[in-house]
Length: 168
Image 1 (tube, one colour):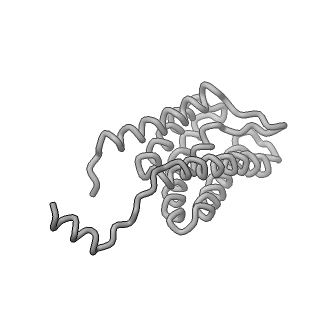
Image 2: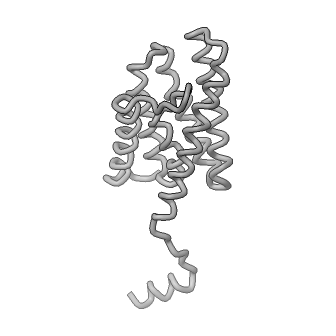
Image 3: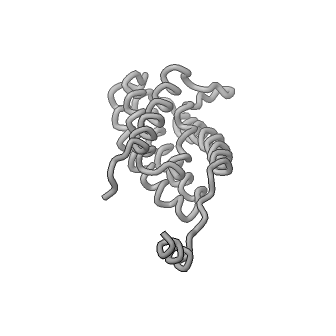
C-alpha cells in the first residue's frame, strides 16, 4: 500500500477545489441549449495524476452537489462518479479513449436517470449524454495538452540500473 505524501494530498486538494470551484463559482458553461459542468472537464486527467485525483474529483463533486438544484438525490452522484473514475483509470492503461468512453457511458446514464426522475423531463437522456460528451471532448483536449507538457520518464533497463548501483 502506498504512503500518503504531501504530493498526493496536494493533487487531491487541487482536483477537489477545481471541481467544486469550477462548478459552484463558474457555474455551467453555456453551449447553446446545453449547460456543461466545468468541473467535469478535468475528468480525463485522472489517467495522469492517479488515485489522489480520482478521490479529489469525487470529493469536489460531493461539495458541489450539496448546492445542486436536483436535490439530495444528487448526493448519490459522487459515489457513482467515484466508481466510474476508477474504471476510467483502469481502462486508461490500455487506452485513454476507452477509459473516457466507459466514464462517459456510466456517468451519462446515471445523470439521465436522475434528471428524468427528479425533473420529469423527457429529453433528459439526450441532454445528459450531450452535456457529458462535450465535457469529455474538451477534457480529452486538455489531457493531451497536459500530457505533452509533462516530463517524460525514460525507462531504465536492468543493465543501466546495476551500473548505477555499482558506481554509487
